[in-house]
Amino acid sequence: MPPVMKRRIAVVTTSRADYSHLHWVLSDLRSHPDVELRLVVTGALLAEDFGRAVDEIERDGHRVDERVPCLLDSDTDVGMAKTIGVATLGLADVLSRLRPQILLLVADRYELLAPASVALALRVPVAHVEGGEVSEGAIDDAVRNAITKMSHVHFTPTAAATRRVLALGEEPWRVHHVGAPSLDHLRRSALLSRPALEQALGVAVAADAVLAAYHPVTIADDTLREADGFFAALERLGRQVLFCFPNADAGSRELVGRARRFCATRPDSRLFVNLNPLVYFSLLREVGLMLGNSSSGVMESPALRLPTVNVGLRQQGRERAANIIDAPPERDAILAAVARASTPAFREGLAGLASPYGDGRAAERIVRVLTEVPLGEALRLKRALEVG
Image (cartoon, rainbow, N blue to C red; front, side):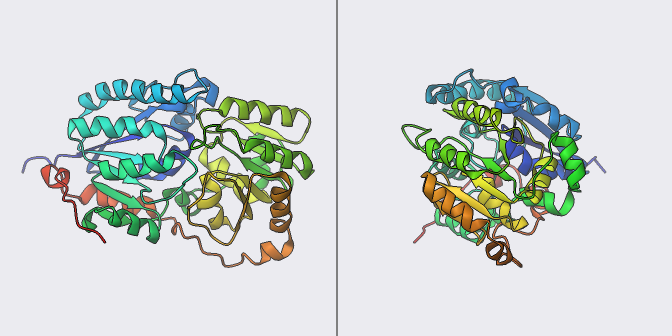
C-alpha cells in the first residue's frame, strides 16, 4: 500500500492573546500522526518592545517553522495599516512555499487580514476559530466578520456565535461549536501554586490584587479617549495593581507609559510585558478582581468565577456571564463597580457559575475536524445559503 499522506496544516499566530488560545491546539496537531504542522509566527510576537514572546512559544515546546517580521515601529493607525501590508508581502512568500492544505487562524486581530487575504489568493482553505463573536468597540469586530466570510471551516465559542455564523449564510456542515480553546488551559495545564506563581512573577500577590488588562479602543477616533477615567479609578483604589501589557494597537505606547508611571509610585504594583499562558491563568486564579476592557475578562474569567469589571465600549456586544459588571469609563462609576464586585456577597453568588464559553475541550474538537474534513475543491467551493 502507498504511504498515507499527512495533512499539511499551517497555523499563523500574531499575538500573546491568540497564542494563548492556540497552545493546546498546536500540541495536539504536532503529536497527531496524520498531520504535518507548520507554525508561522509574526506580528508583536517577534517584537522586542512587546517582550519577544516567540521565545516563550519555543520554551513551551513548540517548534516555530517560519518567522515573518511585520510590526512597524509606530503607535498610530497608519502604522497598523502598513503592518497589514508588510505582513501580506511576507506571508505571500511563506504560504506560497508551504502550500498548506488548511490554514488555521484564531480570533480577530487586525494583522490576521494579511494571512486570510494571502490564503484566498493562493486557494488555501482557511479554518477560523472564534467567529461569530461581537465586540462593537474595536475594529476587531469587522476583522472577525471579514475572516468568517473568507473562511471555509468555522470553530465557534458559544451557541449564540454559532447562530451568527450560520446567519451569515455559511453551510451548517462547516460550522462547529467547540468552545473557546483558551479554557483548555484550566483543564489540561497544571496551574502554578501561589508560591510558585509569586516566584515566577517576582512579586507577592495580595489576596485582593487587581489584574488590570486595558487596551486602546480601536473603533474610536481617539483610541485613548476612555483611558483617563480608567487610570483615575486606579489611583483611588488603594490596592495592588498588576498590569498586563496592552495589545500592539494605536495608542498602546501611551498606555504602557501611564502604567509604568503608576507602578513607579506603588512599590507592590507591576507591569508585565509578557506572561505566558500558564503564568497568566495561574494569576487569574489568585487575584481578587479583574479590571479593564480585555476579551479575557469576558471569555476566560467566568471559568474561574473571578469578579470582573469591564470598562467602556471595547467589549460591547460580547456575551457575558454573571461575574461581569459593566461600567462606563468614568472614575466614580468604575469605583462603584469595583466596590460591588469586591463584596463577599457578590463573590459567593458566583458559586456554580457556568461559563458560556465551553468546557475546556475545544482543542480536541478542533483537531478532530481538521483531520477529518474533506480537502481540495470540496472544501474550497462554498455555497451561499439563503438566510432569514
